[in-house]
Image: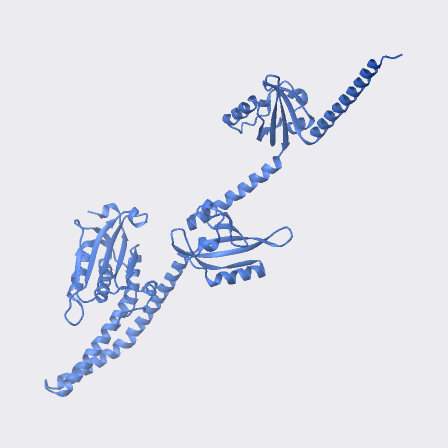
Length: 507
């Protein structure tokens, strides 16, 4: 009769064998699944490869025989720094799992990227005795990322401000060009709305542009915007509606070009054209009027000589004669202001030029008719400044600025004229400059009128022609310089005439 105990052990053994067989099959199945979907390598504690699957051979382009017995330096691309590799080994040698991306080199020299997980197998003492590395090929993803980075770098090379905004105007991309134009870094701009970042007050054209974009998918126009420093600029904007895979509006691609300087130059060209036209009109006017005026003047002189000193008509004739002279002077002044003169430059003392203009101004109109006097002060440099200039034209420009300051001054006002040299750091220019500054304590210029004071025929002074300041700016530009003005209504104005110079011009 069979022993019941033996029967029990046989059944237990059969059960264990069946369980072992199932476990082995699961391991085989898992290994098969890993081999089909991942890149697997096993190394000992020294990093010597003792197992690679077919996927490892395929991507590395080494045979199994070439890989076994080697370490992973055989596929090292040299891309990762020593610190990176040292951190990897320190992590797994301490029994921890390491995860990261590795750039490797195949046997034919081609590069491939793998997303890698290295799992240490530990012995009874908790020490690694082998490492299993499971990798996934991410080469195409890295190539796509590199291409995106390359394109982003190209966008950063653009001088235009390029940005991507969500439909609620939240900024999601901001290139280097935008950083340069607006002053905000990408970190500061991304996540902000365009309304709060680029506009002090949203212009009405913005809403119209939005409607046009929604209708046609694109819009192009000009908007006045503000920089981080508060500077106002004019941007030429190109908007393109970006749609998602379903065709629904998703985002907005915006390309902005700063055309502030272009607009300024365009405006100045228009003003120059106006001045040229004025010059032509003045020349024609002088030709048509001066001859008849000379005839009237001659007739009046004859009539005056025929009448005695007490003749009642003499006063009337003298009045006519005075008006003829005034008209003649006006025509001459108009012609002189409106028609550009060719520069005749030579080395001259700018100090003396400004001093002469100050002295002439002091000898002219000083203030109101009630006897109030406007004081004109000249702060001259300790040493003369010698520059190559058309002395006559510059004296005329400085005199014009001083006379304007005198006329703008109130009772017992003052006009201060200063001549000094400035450095590039002080003027935001690339060259050292000579600056002629004329400031007054007069009525000032309103913010509304300030942009218009250099327009031909614009004047706020009774009896003014509106040609003086355009002529001043023309003379400054002819010398390679510029004119700046700051004014506060009711507190006075300051005009600065900047002229370039070299160190050799300062004696």
